[in-house]
Image 1: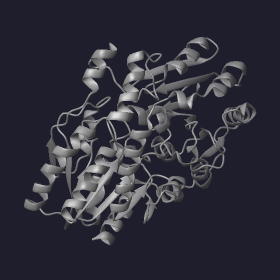
Image 2: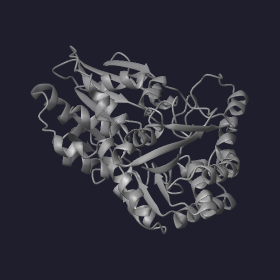
Image 3: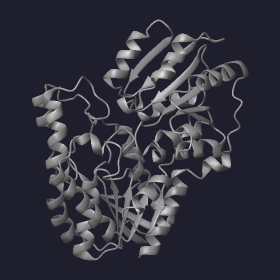
Image 4: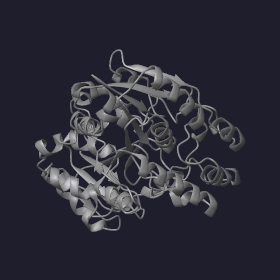
Length: 424
């Protein structure tokens, strides 16, 4: 069996969505003739953890852990946050109105920690891995970014060893929607772009999470690019059964950031009367501006803010839903934004309401799978009409299960293994 070195910052006990892309690929690689060896940090500062993810790691997979130096503990101390308080990107999901320290932290991250806040892991990792692969030969290297610290480690390791490298992108680098929010100066911007180009040029194969982003990254020089969707794991749904409620339950799981504020939809819920009581269930971190509006609407309809749930609890919540809410990022490259939760939404076979560009990749997938509709944020009439129809007529969508199955983690990993075969 061929061996692939998988370099990933996110690895169990990390929780949230970011860990799942690499974890699920590692889970299924052996099915297609590849033995993964995982390289991950031993002391990473993850926003939150989920020990259940440990059970996803295949038996006897070799996991190498090395220390990482991160600035998050210092930032939390300086900004007055608690040690155990989750800290996602404060340009996307803010736990409070940004302070001077918060703004300084954003500027510092974009201008001095390049490509990201894990950059101090690059040099010691490359030094260690060059020696490791000489003593423990591998046939290929796989990296997944962001953080693009992973990407740059893979780039340097490829240059120093000549081992073929598949560079995977969950999100783009300089083209990502939050890049402009990092207050990056000209000098730092040039460095970001130079490092990005170096990685694009040196990779033997590139994969990225959506068709639009494939075209975007090709427009800046990327070659031999294919799409690997985030996907869902069929095994995660084996024990889930739908539990009925007296409410019409609208569910959102995951981060609800300032760039996905569903203001018009919340107004529809508060201003209209429906044939059945409506309840909005929100699991995950919520931006302070969205929370403020939810507090103002309290009493006009039922709202439950559930906080951070385990993955199993979140999937059960989605399974129970009468409608799954999918607000897409309000950004220049929103056409290519395919949130990881989309695929798990698809697998529940429950109706999906996406808010965002109706010509984007998410709208296309939802349409092709027969699982819902996408409307613009401002289209309150379209949102209201959908709610009325679903409440009165039950689910009138017809999910195409064969089409949905194409997005399984098993099938996406099959594509990864094919690309690894090609480059070796």
